[in-house]
Image 1 (cartoon, rainbow, N blue to C red):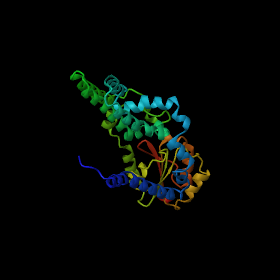
Image 2: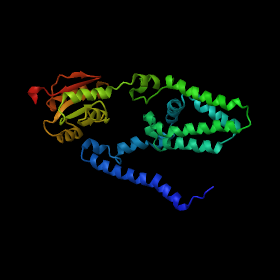
Image 3: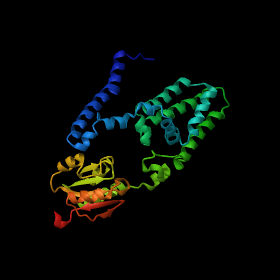
Image 4: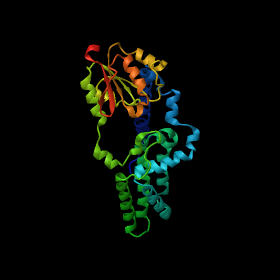
Amino acid sequence: MPRVSVERIALLGCATAVLPAVALAGWTEYADLVKSHNPIGSVMRSNSPIIVRHLYGTLAQRFDWETWSIMADRTIPDITGRRAGFLLPLLALCVTRERVGYYIAALGAFVLPIVAFANLHVVHNYYAYANGLFLLVGSGWAIEGLFRANTRWWLPHVALLACAGIAVYGYYDPGVRHDYRLYSGSRFSGYASEQDRNDRYAQRLGVIIRSAIPSDSIVVGVGLDWSSELPLYAERRALMIPNWIRRDPETGTIEQALAQLPPGEVGALVECPGNSRDHAFVVQLAERLRLDRVPRVAEWCLLFTRSARGR
């Protein structure tokens, strides 16, 4: 077996760890600089208290039973299909005691990001896309241990097929509470139905806005939090008012954000009522932006635009 030089290992480590870390740090610093020019963006800088708390959560959260119950009830079934898809390989590991070290290393790689970014994993299920791979790797090592152990030849094959079947079953029927209690994902009915429906509502909303206002216009979004989907699909500059901003046009943050918009360039205001929580505020905002007070329906949202006489 050829020897690997220390220099080559150092070079590989630099290429796979140091360079990405430096690039990430540089990009974050640049992004924070851009955000600092806007009062809403300034609150969302990487070192702001609200973002730090959102990313990392609290120490107590890491020892909170609810945190780990969400991982057991939602995250693990999202990855393996059902909790049985996690417990079956674990049982095989306990029986054979093969590949224990490999399994523990993979399980540790799965748990470590949850410990580091506890709140993110509690609030959002999709962060498990990254570290969930290690849970599957660990299960794979456990089943591979069955192949290595002196067991009946059919046992590892049954375990492998059972885990695959559980994963497919969970894909069609999640059978668990799916999303954080403050979000609307509780209506989730399964990845299969979601993908089969393939509802591109955000894209359709963007097309409607793109056809309603000139290309140099600005759109203001309320009820979509800080999502960038609207400006992306509308191909327009946008000011997204997050759900946590106080609903008052005279609020300092909103006042400063609106003051930075070029006069007369706001062509549309979009309110998505499911999350905007305050239609009266939106009507006030439309009046402030000199848009028509009577909106039209655009997908599941309301669209305020500027009439020809108001331009």
